[in-house]
Length: 615
Image (cartoon, rainbow, N blue to C red; front, side, top):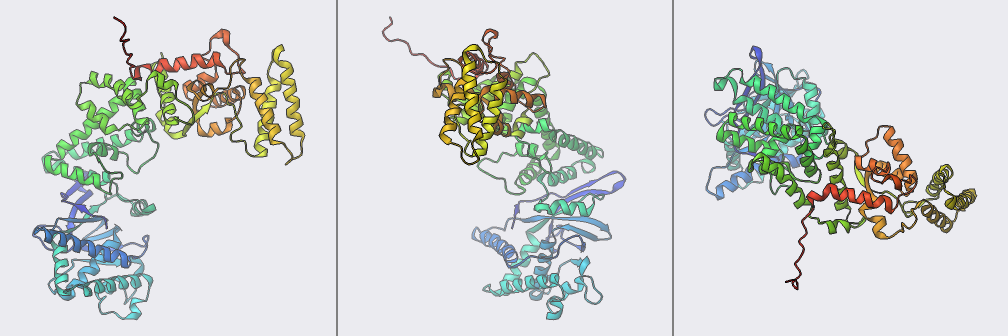
């Protein structure tokens, strides 16, 4: 049973014309403490909802949780802390009638519990009724059934599935009390709890809400009310007319909508989160950034709301909202500042924390924070030039990815086009992996059809390539070998023969003297970042074929990282060394030097030890 501790201030928002738009407040289950709101009125469970389905586990968990809270307080010789159940969502139908949009399981069980207590304590009364729209039959309606549950016979209890489950829940309540050492005292303790410190969070939805749509959203995959929906009602309740500023609520509501709209922008959202995952409400991100959850892997439901509620209780809604506006302004300012956008976006993409970055910005001047982002990146990379040269595919994939991403981000930032911006949204959306610019093995070609496809694609490339006199004969011989291999019947191809052909194809498209050392093959000079989907299509292809396919993808509008595009278009290779069909030392070396130049400001400074023999 989800519990929300501490207190919640009453909240009401009214729109033009005086119509109630939203209400949020804690309500006791039954009347008790003077002045404390309690659940009252006539509740209708509409036909679009499923019936009552709580069973033994849920009923007993509720009772056990309440008892445990009281027992813990008794050990401390203290008053039990307030215990908050999950929100009950309602829409007013006027004259004390409420459409119960969400919370019928809890409200029905609490009604049954109060009814049982009334059998032990005559003065205990429940001040609300429940009626199920689908179970209102002449002479046997649901309201009458609930009010007389203790005396109705088996025939009525079993007359429909909802009555059956409700009756079983009531039996479980009776059984739980019967197991207590003193059932009457236990009933008195639970009565005290329901009338003094057990609350539901009462949420009255805006009057123009479509109840069917709201119910669907709340119950599709059991999506609960978000923290921000509760926070909104809380902030609006403590602003406006009650504070002597009648127009303040409308102003905050307009700002709220603007912030939500900004945060739903794909580029802004990916910049802040490194993700494309959508949420029911994105403004939650602002509140989460203001309520750090150190030590929590996952925030419990309404954890953020609790922290905000406590904050508003201590310093007021006006001060809290000023901080929200300032927080949005800070993040929006980062996003629109081209240098900060790229530096911070990169840090977030490699899992830095926006709350930590905000804290760093608050403790420094603007210029110091801007400069400090270089140091922060250096500290996260933790690489020197020598260490970069040792990075290898298959051994240091995460670091290779971080380095190549940094090269791409810095390349865009350094562009003379002041409007150029790296797309952190595309980077987060597509999923990227390391790609060998020039492959050198048959990894992944395990099936015969995969090998045939590889041979056919490379045969076509060999025959459409203009070879020099020194390679023409070798190209013709390899073409003949491929033709012979493809002519073999299905299932009769020779794995060894294929490997020999593959080695010759790689040698044909390889640069003279390029070699195939581990450093040349798996080092950063032969690696680029490519979408995983594209990677699988290009895997194990020679450079010339990969280049052709990259060009086609680029022409079709696919998002290719700028440095990956530059690699396959040979932008880093000197004009006199241009050979479009191969990727060798004359290409790797300038590409690697360009990479080093881009990331050099972020590399650890290497300390050279003095020669002790030098005077």
